[in-house]
Length: 391
Image (cartoon, rainbow, N blue to C red; front, side, top):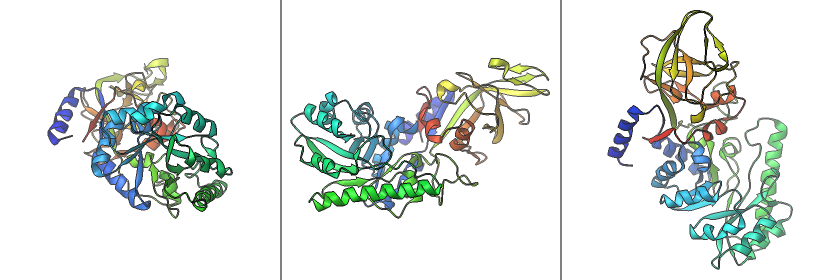
């Protein structure tokens, strides 16, 4: 996007009720942090609309910076990127019905083979020209993949004439955990994956890429190096959850920059007297006279309704924290602005991300904690009507 187009976009957003500003420089910075840690670079995970950041916009920015490998969850997500002109390898990590194998080839996508049955059915439906595949190896997560202890079945796929095997990969299921038993299991997953790679090499198969590392895999197990690393949540400058008091994720921390800031307009300022209630279910009652802001964003935009008041969640108005009160509505939420002077309708509120004026940051992990979940879920549930602006 040219500077003029960016300016026009930002100008148009002045009338929007709620929007997300995505920093392309932050995305490129974060990609640059991880790229040197693998032999050939990163695979940018842009599934679930790039964790809510907008798959096409994110992929364009990263492709412009030199990233040429992308991961999606479905055939539809892959086609969307190709239709938008995204070049390079696009790997479908999830299941694709074998009957749609022709579209995998048509759009020059790469398909993960998730078990022996899937492999056989994909081959049966594949067009005359071989489709590109990566073989998923189940090293202990027991979700998708061919069994690590049946390497002969993995080797077999290299000789299927309807396939062009370009990669072998696995997935770590507890790389974010600091529990010793989980750490030992993660090391076992690496060992199992390595045994498969060694088996294939012993049988003369060398021309394929390898990847098992994820965001947390690199964070906590950076001593293991493979051709590529699949970087998802950390690519967006976010940790799934803060494990340490300083908000970092584990034994170490990368210098990451959050890419998204969500903003919304204040629709109204209202005064409440002591004893008056607010919102659905009368879930909030004023203990004294106070002011509340009605902010134009709600659960239809992706802000969770089930925020636990035990872990207060704030928005930023004029650089000051204002706690969310009452129940989040479909299209609005409420914030206590009693302690913030000079607040008016039309003013911007920062819902998540960095406030330019104060420099304060509202981490997605904090909202996730209040909802009993992880940042990945909070971000990937952000709604389509939340306009994405790339700056």
